[in-house]
Amino acid sequence: MTTVLVGMVLFFVLEKLVLWRHHHDNHERGAKTREGVLILVGDAFHNFVDGIVIAAAFLISIPLGVATALAVIAHEIPQEVGDFAILLDSGYDIKKALLLNSLSAATTLPGAVMAYLWLDEMHEATPYILALSAASFIYIATADMIPGLHQQVTPAALLKQLLLLVLGVGSIALFHLKINS
Image 1 (cartoon, rainbow, N blue to C red):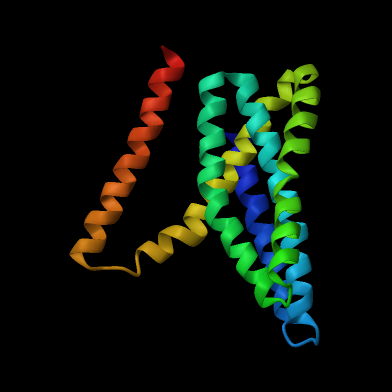
Image 2 (image 1 turned 180 degrees about the vertical axis):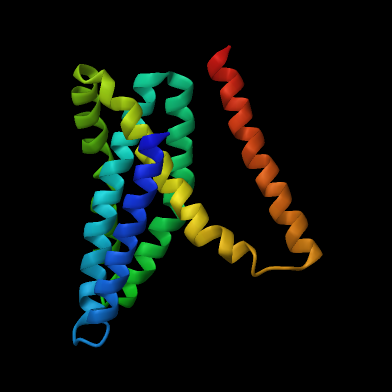
């Protein structure tokens, strides 16, 4: 729990630093070109870390590894589509954007292999890596997603959001039951 809380504070500070830096660079020339490069570098690092998290989860248990891999896939598909659109908007042609986006996505495998080899020897680090991963998702939900959900106040939006929330909690409960049985 301490690692999750420290991780949330770290992600808060990291986001503030990124926002502060972005605010100061907003008016410089060439920002659109740099945006594409930043997307590629950030996404490559993100995918590398996803590989670490997937390997750590598999070392805990196969059902947890499968659940983690599915969660990563679920959040990566829309993110990669968005990254591809940003690359196109940054001036890359379709072939180059697709190639570079695929290369940045491919960093998941080296992250997983390196983590598997390292964490196999360092079992005590695995729970902390998973706790930091959980902290990142909790931070994103509290800082970005929940405020956006509160902007939609119609009864239909409430029902849809409540249904999705219950399905999310239910899927976690289902995986919890599978892991403990």
